[in-house]
Each structure stands twice: as structure tokens, then as C-alpha cells.
Length: 177
Image (cartoon, rainbow, N blue to C red):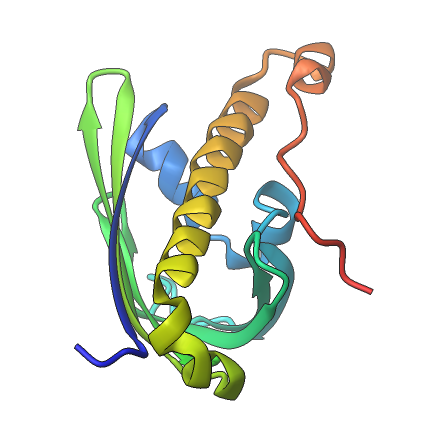
């Protein structure tokens, strides 16, 4: 594996059904609302087919380190309650695979992320900062699990008062200018 290549396996466990989870994950345009610590902006490019294949969006993202990434996401395999696959191009290039499995009242969510860095500065620094970049990814995914759990609670709230009682998701570390 080259210094600019990364392979991450993340596992989340959240209260809810696969159907509830996939409804959240499948709507890329909602990422800045429920996962604002990472997804700063999403620009839909193509709606794709009814099963999600071909859906494309331009993303502006960050983690806890003070740099941002611009990349495009394209759904390459159908969105189902079992999961889906995406392709990334731009500052990140590669594939991501979401898998969902029901375990009683919880959903176990796997995310396999195999990417290489395309952003020139990060490519040049990757050999030195690979552990920091990996920690940045782990931080981002931990915020994702926390934010998804909050979003599911918000969606299941019995009324507006209960919905308002759910805390907001964590925001970005370094505010952009």
C-alpha cells in the first residue's frame, strides 16, 4: 500500500431498524444537517435512478484537523436495506461500502473505505502524517455514529416537544472562514 492509500473499516451500532438507517444514509443532501462536524456543504449533481445508482453529489468536508476536502460521491450499487456502495473522486479517490445488519432493536453498520489522497498538499505530507490522517478519519466516523444516533432519535420523537429535546449534532472543530 502506498503512503497515500488508506483502508478503514468502521463499525457503528445504533438503536433503530435498517430501514430507518438507510433512509438517513441514502439522502446525501441531508448530510450537512445531521452530520455537520464533517459535511460542510453538499451540492447535488445527478439524481440517479430510483435505486440510487448514478446519484452524484459534490461534497465539501473536513475532520478535526484544519484542512478541508472537496470530492464527488457517486452511488455505484443500489441502495437497499442491506447497504450500498459509493465511488469517490477528487481530493479523495476510491470506494466506500455501507453494510447494514439488524441485531435485535439495533442496526450494526459497517463502512469499508478504501481511498487514496488526491489533494496535492496531503499527498506530499501523507508519508509523514499518515497516523494523524487516520486519527482524523476515526474522529470523523465517531462523530457520524453520534450524529446518526441523534438523527434517529429526532425522527422517532413522538411530538415536536420530544424532537426539540434531542440535542443537536456536534459541529465542526475549526469553523471555516
